[in-house]
Image (tube, rainbow, N blue to C red; front, side, top):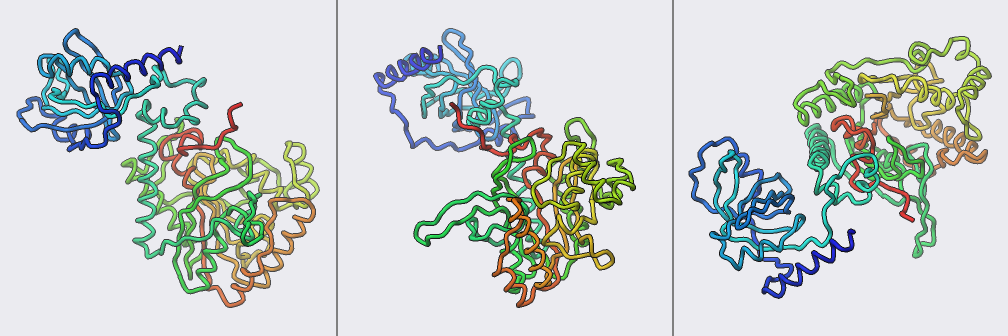
Length: 488
């Protein structure tokens, strides 16, 4: 069926060429965009302007009425109606118009008027076919059966689904606001290596490649953290990077192997300073993008107005996760409890990592309102500073909104000897078979030995934050081209 429709369109294209239509012209210059016209004239009942408007866009609908026709066409800013009349265009040009199809890209020139039904419309005085669409656009482009096609052919998704276009426009505005907010607060934007000899800054399995000229294996970064902290050593006291990171992990509604992260570091600051900064950043971002600090995500009302609640890690396991103190006080019972819940452990993982997996299963989904969790165990935080009162935990927080981890921050570990010991413990876990354990980075240790100022740093997941602010149920809905299994 589709092949015959494609052939019909190619036949029309051949007829257009026979009529002298220039294929694929590149000299049409629009003078306006649809949004500008809608903004200026959309509320005016009487259109008195005599100006000619030149616009370009894709035909989305055609209604023929003998010697006249209406179309709806859209550009990247909106949709508008246009009116074609044989009496206005002449028989030859109107004949060319009748060979156009939904999906074709055209340029038009004409004057504005309102139809009898009050719709703002361009009366076309001149038009030009700019691109012939050989494939028909889908008529109904929604429903579960089309979800994978929407991801694979995002260009189609963007053409026919206005809400999808608006979501990605919002994503761009979110990143612009974040960048401006950080620069306004005296942070310097920097770039660090995407290919790294030693992947670091997170507990994750990296993608591996090989550099022929250097003759060495390289890894796509799992995080920019260790390079950004080298810049603290070098004297840049406030730095940030909006980076693409890569982790060789599973794909689900919250995870994509390639994702976008904001990481920023501030000398002479603590994790508590960054908690306050994060509340200010995200609440102002919501106000800017959505016009309110009170939002709705997947039917749940969320109030981003500071201050946000803050819970202790272990207390949250007891009070929200309903794990008894008796279990939490006994390592063997913790391990057994996790096993009974079906939680799988990697080789070499200790009780600290088990507790974080219990948290992810029992507590995280229940944290709907913005919530900071503090007091994470050392084992799960190999780069964070030890807490002065309790050396078994770190000065670290994670932020959760709508049951999703949005941010992770901590006061930085700047003791080179302690950092070496932590790396060695991670290497022992790697030797035991944990592929996500951190590798030792000797150059980073050397940098710390020169002296890194006391500091705090944080990573914010741009994709998940965008999900919250655009009411998207899957991370693939906020990534233009998400990773999918190849079609067979």
